[in-house]
Image (cartoon, rainbow, N blue to C red; front, side):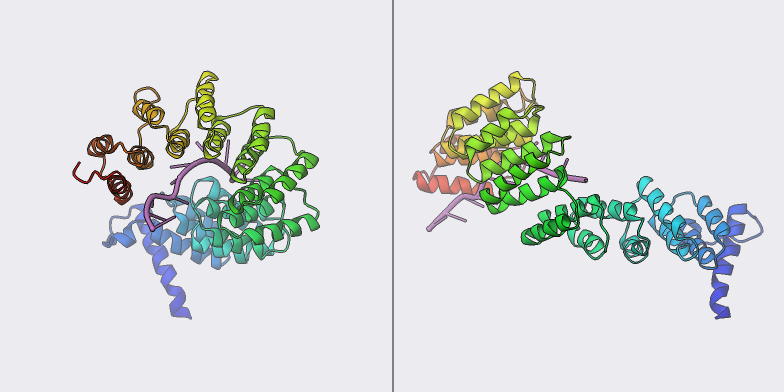
Length: 373
DNA sequence: ATAGGGTTAG
């Protein structure tokens, strides 16, 4: 036990000599020892565990490039002595832009859940996991705790929606309501996006009615955009149009969702009309908007219009076509018999055509009996 | 913390 505790002391000596620039002390030669943050982290952890928080802070503050390891050392080390400080430090770490790792995760899971008032760092970490697509971690962090605030509920719902845990999401929503939390815009967005995915117009319109009833107010554009999208995807273009006409503060996403919905329902001329109108109202289409119009043309057989749009993407709209745009345009050409033109588009592509491109092209050749083109 | 695209064949 004594021998064990000597190791950090030795490290402390080396550290002191290093930071004092002592010339008679031989400098550690390995990069691990000389890079500071490794030694520093061990020392921070050591002092914190010895309940010498002053020294832990001191060493910590002297580490020039603080990484997640030394933050974890300080946070984990001082938890037993001062849980509040530990939580404050966790917040500070997140604010300074350091991403948590699995060690931080277990700290937040095991330790901060013991302190009921510290949902903030837990939520912040959960949100980071959500953003990185680690939904399992988000759920683990938020589903096992006893008390959730509105933010925790919403982050949990978002994780379920994105992870395709649809029925779980509605169960959680039920539970959330039974604990007295009202649906807000974030809740609405998560649940409506699920309705679009599982084609549940009944659920979606019920939620719509609920949203009107609760009327949470701010940031309505987000909810209206998702409502608009939900209605087109669930087959009710009429309702989608009504949402669009009645909403104020439309943005690029509102327009794109509308155009896409019109194209999907076979109203390609209306879609292109809206595309024009959108430009007149000062909205600049982006890459997704172009996918919406090109796909619309592709599904409705408007070769000329689609090609005009594709050919003017770069020159007029300053958007570089990517692989998906090429797929849409090649299908537009091949599907309707313009094999020669499809071939010349392929040879002019700025990147290697992928298997999808070839399959579409060959299918066109097969269909139009033009294997020697 | 939340929103907009498509799925080629048979």
